[in-house]
Amino acid sequence: MVQGDGRLKNLNTNEEKNSYDHITNPDNGAGVNIYIMDTGVRSTHKEFGGRARHMGGGKDSDPSPYCSGGDPNTDESGHGTHVAGSAGGSNYGISYAATIINAKVGCKSGFDADQLMRAVNDIINEHKKNKQDKPSGWAGSVINMSFGGHTDIGPGFKLACQTAYNEGIPLAVAGGNDGVDAVTFQPCNYPSVFCIGASDQSYRRADFSNYGVTLKGYAPGNDIKSADFKSDDGYTLKSGTSMASPMVAGIFGIFLSFE
Image (cartoon, rainbow, N blue to C red; front, side, top):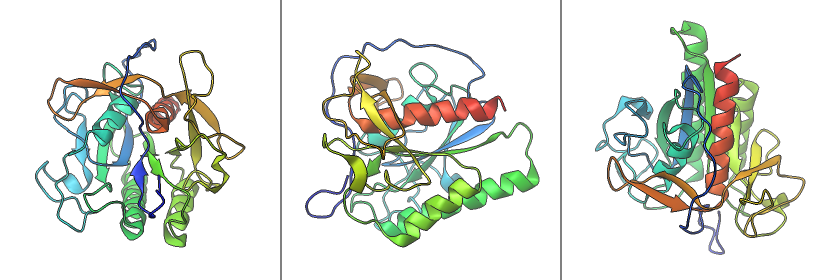
């Protein structure tokens, strides 16, 4: 979210016990590209089974095209890897057969509005190329954004999100962890996105989750187990609307894969 000083931050809260049920279908998300706009992804984690890559085809150590400071593609904080695992991890995710594509926009220097816009536009261009070339098995694209705030991100980014939606790319977005009405929370309040709040194990709104008519729905976001960034076989527990949003991104992947 955007804090009082105007900086964007990711939307996880704490790490606790995980107790959600897990339902499997090996074809979930087959042929779908799920783009994770976050702090990077540990692409070699066993949750992804070789299904993860970086935008532009770079290596883990290559600089992210969306970080001006030369930050590597790989995850250095753990947020993006956890989010990616919830969207498409083989053990703790939803779309187990989807391709996870890392668009690292959460840099050491923070989130930059121009780079956010550029990342979305690059995703749109890749999506349009796939629609034109029709690669074997390709079924569509999904974007997950587990970040946001109460400060205006800018018209360029908002327009890019609308263009993605118009091109047929669903966007799952975190609703925020302030426990307030999300009416001013961006990009949650964009008409082009599907903004998600967090529910707890009792199927109630989690205490920290934002709420209101801006949200399109709720998904599990309390005590979520997913991939850890520190090793290829590690797991960690997090809570937040950041964890709820990729659940819905994974559901979008299922819909697209079976259309």
